[in-house]
Image (cartoon, rainbow, N blue to C red; front, side, top):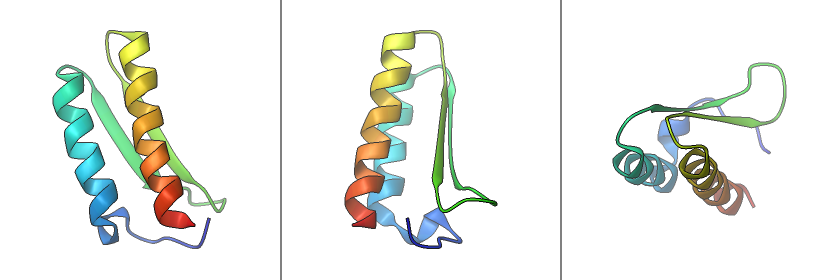
Length: 68
């Protein structure tokens, strides 16, 4: 992953997060660059584990596509 300072610089990722927030209804999503590693951290909290996993994977897939 290239050095990323602001996730806001990637509109497709922001759009994916907004869509995921609507799906999740209750819970929260945090996506940020790691401060110590060349990685993007995707953290999702909610009531339904299957939904959480699906949302996290959807966001991660968009990030992976944008980072290639």
